[in-house]
Length: 421
Image (cartoon, rainbow, N blue to C red; front, side):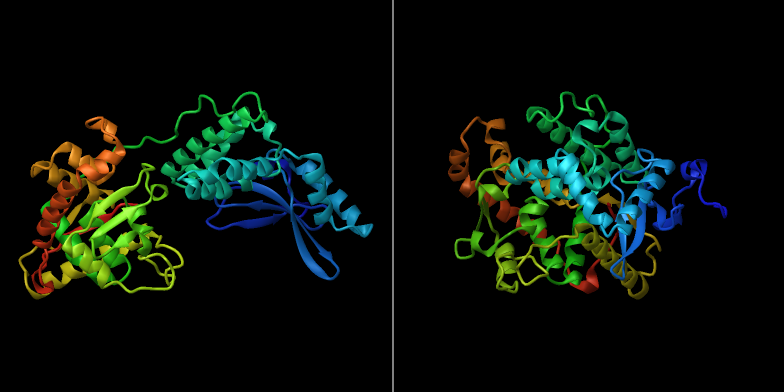
């Protein structure tokens, strides 16, 4: 960058690398320009306090704070240091006293008062704390403008995460509606901004060969994910609801799983009759001190990392295919490749099979915990009790069909199915 230090033009044009890096930006000595892989640029000041090296990140990022302003701020901070004052302590005090309506403060209040009561609190909290607050935390909420939103969403798109960009924009719309209601702002800076990426509605139904492949490859993963994938296939319930299953909600003697309303997307109590294979799977599952069934933390927390687990399942499918090709079926093509699939395809496949095999729409809706008002206008309580026998019969028939797909490992014919991201 030159011996004389950075210029304003160089700051503007310096680009990101694969990893985060810093460029000296003094004078004064200790000022650095920090460039993230996303392209975000910020300012940091390194100094020594009581013999220890400390780092202070300035509240404003580039271009809101330019090179000249960053140097002036760094000089002021170091003047405080010469006077025996820790720059980090004074910055924190200034932010709290002078800017009580910072984005971080308002976001924290929104998450506590509004989001904590919702079913999606985990995802919303994670996205806000990871994608939004770090970028804007010291900005006053009323200073956030449309360009700020566009830059934030563009940075996510540049990371090749279009679905996350859409989700972040959607969550921000909720957040800014709330800030208007609370009087923090008058007009939403996000109004009129369109989702940056197009999303296609998934309508994929697994073929019998594909379902057979998944069912027979799942045990290679062992517990918990091998059992999880099979239980998901047998019940057709949502992936998060199965992942968060608790022993307290299971009655093995009655072969019934009762989801409390706070555990369901629909916000209704939901009874899921368990077929014999589903009950057998649970009886053979290890029991831990914690409440969760499918867990890697002794029951303390439910499983997560579905994309990695699905990738591991895909690896098991590929390994089995190679074994079949090398040992038994040399006539098979070297590359047997299927279309992308997702966990929700298991639920959709169950739905399609039941519809094709005479399960009535209102019974199917009760199995899936869809709104009863969308079928016969009956109440949720009525649907829960009225169709229990029909639900059990349908799930038993489906389980019998799935079990018919099970083959000894020596007979499994596999298809390499690329896991969807």
